[in-house]
Image (tube, rainbow, N blue to C red; front, side, top):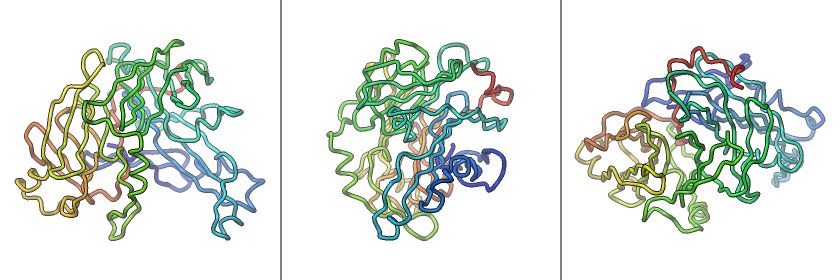
Length: 375
């Protein structure tokens, strides 16, 4: 289990991961110079303030991490008068990282012109052929990074063997959670509606759409209404942090038990946790589990669960990669493991924040995989 937001590790030469046994969350560290010094603009040092962002965009099913570093410039005079003004598009770079060997790829090339704006977010996915193309007995030999863009009606992709970006599709959708690699395709998920998948290695990707299970599709204004309901939640250190009840917090599509699954928690008591598996033909979903969490908390005798006492919806933390019946929830200041087959809480640990958690599968060949040889 890997936290999405990177922490700073001073002036060390490259990224690193401090691994923790689940349900504890592993932490990615990135040196400050990678996110700020390497992206700074000397001409602006005197009159702007730089705000760096460092995140894991996505993980491949082979354990490779797609990292994004952005530095947004804001005019200092604008900050003084209380009206921040963004100074153009952020500086940014994207890297592929092997968390076992510590190897990082060269920066993915920048995109010049109007297309560059498409990369000004963290909604990119990474896919390797081993994600579904061939036997899982060995390492991949190439990778693709891609983004689907709704307004532009296209897929923008980068291939490791060509080291270049290109446009390959015109029928696409935008997602709200991290892109997921499964079945030889990347899946972009709109947790209010459904998911669209495509093969970024193909020059004719043939996007496919699957709607969420019946009863899970939300109105078009679901996100707008959620933004209007901003609130404060405990931050794990005695304070509070700003939070909005966005659908992505209590809904998730991910790979677990070798199958794509959709998991959600209802927002009203008894806070029902439901899990669905995608059908064999990819056209719909089949309900596998349904558990009432309120009853589970009471029956299990867990007085340390504060979120239910405050009538807060438990948040989806992550899906267990190899156990389809297990879900990690974020409840107050804890990660809580729920076994849906048993209808029990089987473990928990402290959690300092409510940021999303990503799956990171580490196959045995990752320690000998060289990013430089992919493509």
